[in-house]
Amino acid sequence: MTEQRIGVAVVGLGGAVATTAIAGVELLRLGMRDMAGLPLAHRTDLVPYESMVFGGWDLAPDDLAKAAHVHRVVEPAQLDTVAGPLGRISPWPAVADPAYCRNATGANTVPIGPLRERVAHLRADIARFRAEISAHQVVVVNLASTEARPDPASPALRSPAAFEAGLDADDPVITPGLLYAYAAIQEGCPYVNFTPGLGADVPALLELAERAGVPVAGKDGKTGQTLVKTVLAPAFRSRALTVEGWYSTNILGNRDGQILDDPSSLASKLDTKGSVLNQILGYDVDDHVVRIDYYRPRGDAKEAWDNIDLVGFLGQRMQLKVDFLCRDSILAAPLVLDLVRLLAEAGRRGERGAQEQLGYFFKAPVTRDGRTPEHALHAQERALLDWLDAPA
Image (cartoon, rainbow, N blue to C red; front, side, top):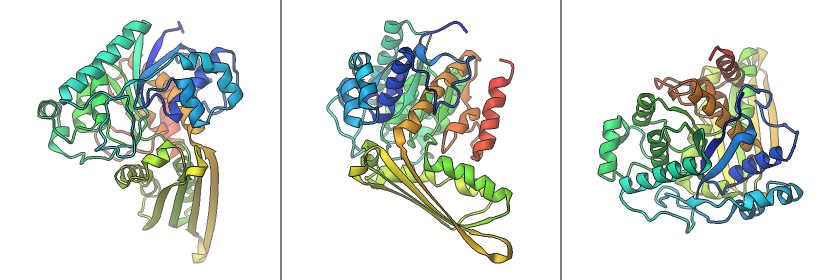
C-alpha cells in the first residue's frame, strides 16, 4: 500500500492514553519492533502506524513530553528517546463545559459561548490541521474524560434537523462530546468515540453520518475488566454453567479515576461496563455489581478484581476469582491506533454511518438500527476479520 499521511485529531490529546499512543508511534518510527498489544499489527493492508500525524485538543496546555512525564505510563528511558517529537506537540484550546465533567479542569479552553460558535471553532481547527500536514485524511478520536450523560432520547438528539435547531437554540442537552462528533462529521472526518459519553451514537448524528458518507464507531473502549468478562461469559454459557452473581470492582488513581469520582460521570461509565453480561449469557444476572473507586496511590496501574459465583451440575456452587493488575493506558493505546487504521480503511472503502464490525473494540458498540449489539469477543473478532478480508 502506498503510504499516506493520516491526521489524527484527538480530543484529550494530553491524557495518558493519547500520550502513550503517540509515544508508541514515535518509537515505531525509530525502529521499535515490539508489536505486543497491537491486535492488527500483522495487517499490512492497513495504513502503517508511522503514517499518523497527531494534533488535538486538551484542557491543559502542556506539551506532550511534559504531559507524558506527569502520567508516568511510558518508561523513562523510552520517554527520553521520544521527548523531542512529543515536546513539539501542544494541544489546541478545548471546547469544554464543567457542567458535564465537574472534575476536569484546565485553562486551555475556548470561552463558553453560543454552540454555533464553538462548532465553528472546532471545524476551523480540523480544517487547519488537515491543511498544515497535507493529510490524505483526518480521523477524529475522542479520548476525553467521561462526561455526564444527558437523556439520549431528548428531542434535540432525535434527528439531524432537530439537532440543528438545538444548536441554534443553545440547547443544554448538546454536550461538548456531541459538538466534537458533529464537527468531525461536518468536516467529512471518520470519527471514533473511545469514551462512555455520548458521541455519534445518538440518532441525529448517526443519520447525519450516514447522509454525509462518514464512518463512525464507538463507544467506550473495551480494555481490561470488560475484556475479561466478554471472554469468560461465553465459556460459561457454552458449558451451561449458570452465573448466579458477578461482582466487579476497579481501583485506579489516574485522571480517569479522578473524573469518575464524580457521580454523574461515574453513572455513564457504569452503564457501559454493566451492559454486556446479560446479552452474552441470554438471561439477567440479578446480582451483577460493578464498582469503580478512585484510589490515588495506584495511578494508571489499576486493579480490576472479579468474583464470579457459578452453579453447576446437581446445583453445586463454585467460585472463580480474577485479579487483573494492569496499566489502563497500555491496554487502551494500541486499540486506539488500530481504530485509526480501521476508520481510515472504512473511509477508503466508502463506508458510511455506524461501523458495527468494529464492535470488537468497545463495551457499548454502536449499531445501525439500535438493536442490541454482539458483546462476545470471539464473535466480534470474527465479524471484524470477515470485514477486513472481504473484497474492498
